[in-house]
Image (cartoon, rainbow, N blue to C red):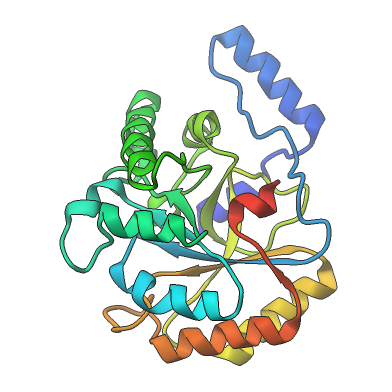
Length: 254
Ligand SMILES: [Zn+2]
């Protein structure tokens, strides 16, 4: 929680970012690349995002999204491609990409990136990008989600070398002034109701902001982060009924 607070008070203006960039040049430190504001979110947008590359996301979430004419963003751990039947294989990631879903990056090992050096973070992204690009049939992931939602300015700067934007697990919605390397989310739990999703979407519509929903497993409930297939279908229905536009994360980032 203290991290959330410190994030809130970080300077976000272009002027401050330029000052940081100049200071970074002077000290030889890489300049943060998050100075640019988001080009997207003119009007309300909803994104469905899925973490960890669970196999049941393909079997349960994708059909529900497709039936509603929606596409989601799936943040895959590249090492998990060989973790066994609970996780998406490379062939299943290809199926996701072929279906028009966005394949995003969730690092190689799911490490807490704040415990790594800049070069360690770079290695996580370089190796996972290679694997995921190959799995997706040549399309390089354009967005990432930080494992455990954990990032700092070093992580964000390295992420900016690879991606258009990255999602944290900090709560909230996103507007043009939001740091695109610290995107906020509505973290979905087993108990999250369709009515709660609809209320969040309606609020996003009223505020003209970008709401990013964060899911984990869709089907069998193994943790409080997982939702049943029926619950997920009800969430999709609630979003559809709102009439608010659904876009993938990279589409929303423009
Ligand atoms: Zn994760």
